[in-house]
Length: 225
Picture (cartoon, one colour):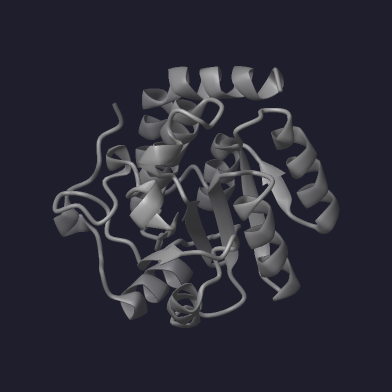
């Protein structure tokens, strides 16, 4: 299991989030990154293809966000019916990861008024990094909306899924054609850190080694779709 950094090491102020995101890294290659966790909820667990794989990739991305000291946002879809975000992600838990915003919604896009307000506290345009479900519905509608508004969009291929696995490659192809960057989680992490001669990279390479088995399994599953 990937370890989560202590809450004391995680900033909670949006203004401080912005400062860290945009100035801490000496040579950032991804401008203003914002990992965005879409609707990874308990009720979806038995229905979504390879749900555990998506959760494992998201855990890795969250650890990377801590190492790189960048903010995270998350949503749930109608949580009164579909439940809370899965506990493994430890979002907003006492010893877990504090989000910039963790919004419930009925929209299929993540861009609710609450999310928009949180994003507005950061300098625009952002590089939004999407993981979650479903690839052809909420992930797609979120990515397209962000692209229309001038943000850069990264869709983590090994971090999205749908009820029917056949939806995933079709959705990824559509989003690539629309202008999204469809990448793997490990590719994104290396691009985000940009330089091996940094303290962040030394922590990131530990994460890569910790998660090597789950990364391999996720990529193998992705290639079978």
